[in-house]
Length: 303
Image (cartoon, rainbow, N blue to C red; front, side, top):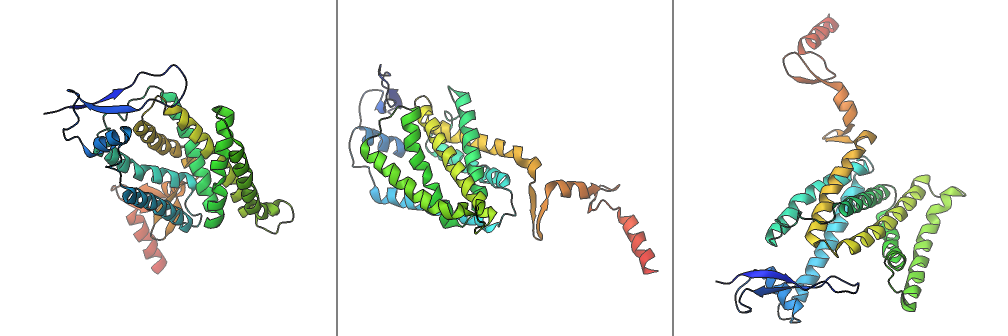
């Protein structure tokens, strides 16, 4: 019987990406059967490509894109009836069991909660949750294609922020690509901002354009934070804590007006709580009326 364990190389004296971990046996052999995800990781780190499956990787990537677009379409279909903060809450809440199942499958559930820098997760949660809320708000004000086009400002800004905050070198080719990308963003953005000048476009669409640009900026900043965090934190820890933090931070938007979904439409939670009171028998009736009192009123109207 063999036992697999994770062995990390000592940290280098010079700055750079974190060292790769190596999956090895206690006796130094490599012929025992390890869990699938550990065998793939070990083969990749040894430079072997026998376990790679490009078709599966492409399929998973396409599935992720389809899932993301489907989420955007569903948010767009609400037509602005559901506040962005509430959308962020349920999006993060429903993702939580999926994240836990993934960590359980990769056998990282017991280490996913361990962190050496809890405040970094707080800041990453604040920035990421704000970016998510702004992008969801923009989806309710702009057509989906324009939101998608303007969201491409995030990777462009990421190159700039990486040079400023991380000190990464930006070569001439990247500078040209950034300039070309910003030109495309400006072309898409210009018609939306005419609402502030001649009013040809509605103010709602202009506001949506501003929101999606702010969201793209925060997305780029979140990527910078993640880039710094992965030097000391596991990827599983970053994903798990962001799911928890975004769920909790979105609850702060309840005072701004959440709605209670129902078959007849959405009713504000505050209004629903105000109009619904328990009667003396423990029943819940709309408007806070007692059943006997309502019957007497109907009888009087009948006379």
